[in-house]
Length: 101
Image 1 (cartoon, rainbow, N blue to C red):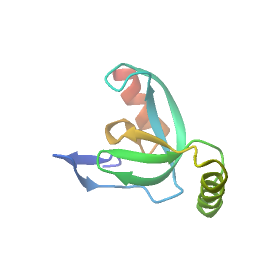
Image 2: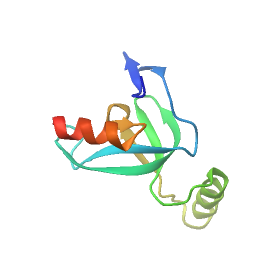
Image 3: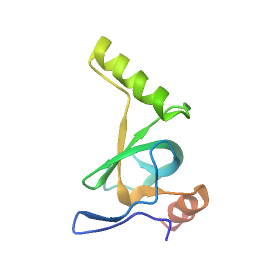
């Protein structure tokens, strides 16, 4: 199964590697309906959330270096987090889930 699975807040399977492209159903409200499907670069997972990079940089080392530099300069970094249940390995899977909503 390509979809991330979780049970009782514990990760069971995570088919993404840092730097890989993933697809996310974006929402204006965590409990609301999906707005659109967008791609991101997977970085990590924390509890029930996926940490992603929202820009078109493909190299994981470039992403990390950029975040270190931005944090040092501005004490901020443009990382995003989404619920695991809204993340998919392929655009086709994300589109299919989005259409079912």
